[in-house]
Every structure is written in C-alpha cells, then in structure tokens.
Amino acid sequence: MTKKTAPKPNFTKRVGNPTIAKDEQGNAMLLCPFCTPTHTLHPQVPSPCGTQLILTAEQVVFKAKYIKGMVCVKCKKPGGEMVRFQNAYVHTHDCAPGVMTMTIPPTYSKAAAVVHKIKVPFVKDLIERYTGKAMQVDEVTGAGERTGTVLGYFFHKDVSHAKRIETSS
Image (cartoon, rainbow, N blue to C red; front, side, top):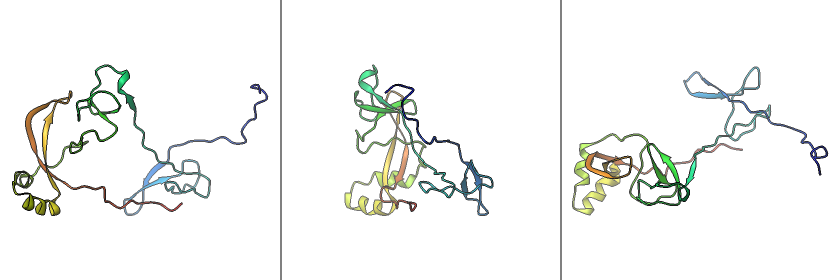
C-alpha cells in the first residue's frame, strides 16, 4: 500500500482548552471551548455536543542507567526509573518506606515533637491514633545528604483511606 492508496480516516479531532469560570457559589466550572452559548464539561462524561473532558497527569521518567551520577535522594542508590523532585531525583517506586518527599513544608507542631519523643509504644500509638503519626523533618541537601539539623515535627495523617470521587459514565 502506498501513500496515495492508504485509506484516509473519516474524522479528525480538534483539541481546545476549556474556559474556567465560577458559579454563584464560587465553585470552579470548566466550560466547552467549542460551543456558543457554552456549557459545563465534566471529566470522562461525553457532553451533548460530543466534547469530552479528559484529565491526565503527566510526569517525565528518566532511565537512570543511561544518566551518569543520577542517584535517588531517598535511598541513595542509582539505577531504575526516576523522576525529578525539586532539585533532585527519586525512584518511581517507594524505595525507602517511611521516608517522604513533600511538595510543601508541613506545619510544625511542638505537640508533635513531644509525642515523637514518647518512649512507651502503647501510649504513643494511642495518641497517634487520634492525632496522626508524629514525624520528624530532617534537613536534606540537594544531593540527598542529611545535614543533621532537625527542622521540626508534624502530625501526618495517612489519606490513603480517603473516598474516591467518581463521576458516572
């Protein structure tokens, strides 16, 4: 089959960025970029005009074996697949359980420092059941070395049990 005899598709797609507006309560709405008058779009739900809003999250993944000197700041090991995190790199899988990379600094708490230093496991677990796990934040350089400085303590509540919000399709 040559270029001239290859079948042509019966359709093409047009892509546009939805317009963002607010409703009466101040909630954000995504509006169709193709229709006048416009209407709201909902993720993964086709609208009457045929427009469908598709949300994706995209991240660049590096193959560390091809890049000299790339080391994970969490586990200090090279190799595997890594992503850029601020001024360093971390593995795509949880290579160091218990070590977190945070996008924004937590709110430090003196109460979390007290709970973190409790030596009796039963008492500490009982308190952490209500407050969240008391965690220590260490200062780390861009190369992943700890400076030995404790920046503070905070209560971390695991949100893995949070309800997922799904739209009907």
